[in-house]
Length: 203
Length: 360
Image (tube, rainbow over all chains, first blue to last red; front, side, top):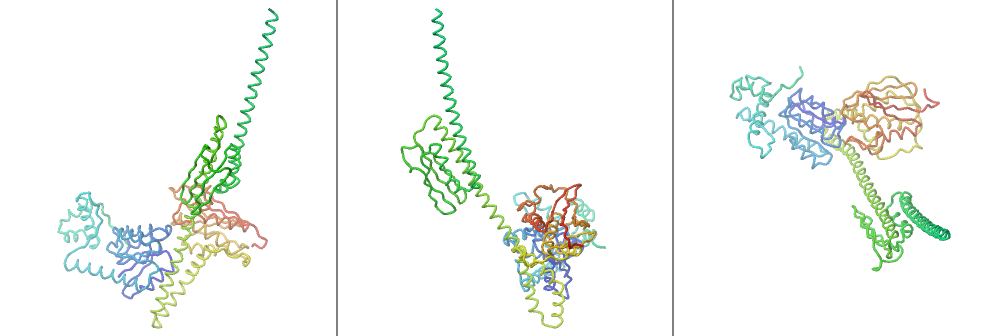
């Protein structure tokens, strides 16, 4: 698994690396939201451990929310984000879950708690992958505004599914068409309709 | 006939004289009354200034001015953050007297007063009303000022606690993870890996702990001694601890207090961290004990240079609004100065140190 650890505090970041270190996992670090978003676009991470309060807004969850919002359109759109925070846990938890966090832990957290959360995330990821590969079922999650009719919901689901499949196939339109049971022209039409761009990657 | 005209002239002159004298008397009387009114109103205003807008002292010392306006009593009570304070000046409340009530209620402060006077008429009544209006207006301003000061102090304290809590929680997090790691390191290999990791981490956490303590305490200056400070590596170290990228030119050594020097630049780099996190700060060390720190300004950010050093004023959610103020005050103790300049989309802090005979 690819794990990204995001925390502005170097000492805590290093301790988190030490805590989650595992020969089977690849671990990378980011010191701020900007670096984290760059990493998420360059490589498909599976798990992100994210500190919500980082400079220049270390007393608000703004930087963490920016990272959460960047995940769905990044190269790591399937990743599970485990959020860490020390300030106003209740309010931060609500915002974190609202922006797509998988789990929420309040500092100071014990190593065992963190490892349990990572294990849960891995379990969910593996089961999703199993379901996709064996049953051909793709899970998508989205926020829907009630009372606005269903057309927008249909469009949002369509876009989300398309982005997911494009990501999984590394933007191979032919493969996407086959996977979705569409013609290639339809896939191009949908890419243009939703203005989907291929994320930039390294190399 | 001539005698008749002569007599008429004398009578007319006499009448005019009486009228003139009457007018003069009235004017003098009105002048005296207006002077008396002015004196009382100014007296109330100056009293309020003298007691520094303190509510209780103002009420306590305003009575002589009110009695000059022919009030016979001032009675009531003040509910002062849960404490009842009775107010008794002059005569007690009487139903035969004319009453002027006053009620002010604001978060934690309640003022219930009633001023009495005899049955006055004409300009005396008018004067009393004007004086009472002035007294009420000043008292209302004082109460509002007190509440706003109280709320501001409360907000500052909460903000301070927020900052200290954040740092302490991070330190606590480090210790928790460290304790878990040490407990689980069983083999020699694991212990060695933990040791090597700690070797690189400990300086950072130690610096963090020191900064946190510095925020909460004032170092004893008696115990500090001046030393020769190598400016360039010190600035590089501070910038790195705040994750601020710098381009530094020049070098110098200054004679001064290490803690004060570091504190000044910690606050400046922290300011850059908050307001220009992506920018590369250009640091120029000059021979004349001057250090300039510049970074491009955000086009959207409007700079209020006049308020930069105002305590508890900040445009950043991450700041307490004390950093630049404290930096400047700290520099003053060293005989130095700190200025800010905003020109051509560049924000520049100019730190000028005083010349010391020991400097190189």
